Image (cartoon, rainbow, N blue to C red; front, side, top):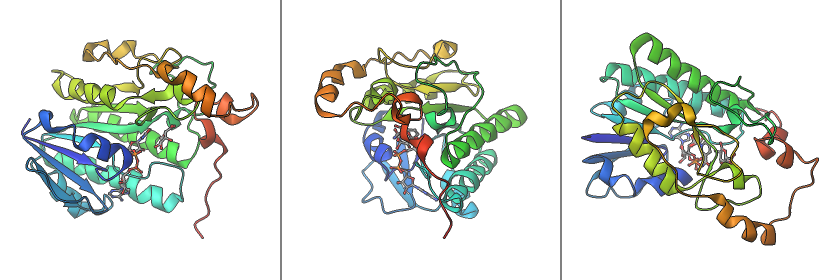
Length: 265
Ligand code: NAI
Ligand code: 15L
C-alpha cells in the first residue's frame, strides 16, 4: 500500500502501533488532535480535530487504508463523545467516500456488549448491550460503517477490541487482553485479505479464558499467538481478586458498567 492513515496516533494504542506499521505502507500518515512529535522518514504528521469536516477531508485525501483509533476512549460527557466519535466518524466516512473508499479498520470496543456476563460466550451476531454512552458511540460507529458498506461497498473491519496493552492488568483482562503483536498481525490480515466485507472481529489474543468466537472470520487467516494465561500467576500475586458480586467480576464490560452519565456542567 502506498499511504496508510493512523488516527489517534498520540494515544496509548496509537503510539504503541505507530512504530510497528512501517512494513505495511510506503508512507504512514499519523494524526491526532494533540501534538505528535517529529515525523519519521516514512511518516507524514497531521494534527487535526476529527470534528472538523474540511480538515478530515484533507486528512483522508491520498490514503489507501485507514486505521481509525482516534476518539474518546472511555466514558465521558456526551458532548465530547459526540464530537469525536459521532461527528468525527461521519466526517471520516464522508471523506473516505469522496476519496476512493480506502479500507478502514474501525477501533470498536467490547463496551458495545459490556452488559453480557463473563460466563456468556459470544459470537459476532449477538444483540448489542452497550454499557455506557461510550459503548453506544461504538455501536453508532459499527452501524454507520455497515450502512456505508451496504450503500456504497465501503469495506470496514469492526474490531471490538478487548484490552489492547502491553500486558493484562487485572483478572478480567486475562480474558479480554490482546497483545500488540496480535493486533499487528490482525491489521496485516485486514489490509491483505482480497475481500474484507464489513465483519465484526473480536480483538483478543488466544487467551484460555476468552469470551468471544471469531470462527466467522477464519477467512482473514488471523491466528493470534499470545495468551494472557502467562500472566495469571503474576496477577494473582499482585492484584486483589474482585468480590464475586462486584461488576468487575460479573460483566464483560467490567468497571464501565458502573460509570454514571457524566454531567455537561
Ligand atoms: P486513547 O484515549 O489513549 O487514544 C485516543 C486518541 O484519540 C488520543 O490520542 C486523543 O488525543 C485522540 N482524539 C480524541 N479526540 C479526538 C478528536 N476530536 N480528534 C482527533 N483525535 C482525537 O485510547 P487508546 O487506548 O489508544 O484507544 C485507541 C482506540 O481504540 C479508541 O478509539 C478506543 O475507543 C479503542 N479501544 C481501545 C481499547 C484498548 O484496550 N486500548 C479497547 C477498546 C477500544
Ligand atoms: C476500552 O474500550 C477502552 O478504550 C480501554 O481504555 C480499556 O479500558 C478497554 O476498553 C477495556 O475494556 O479494558
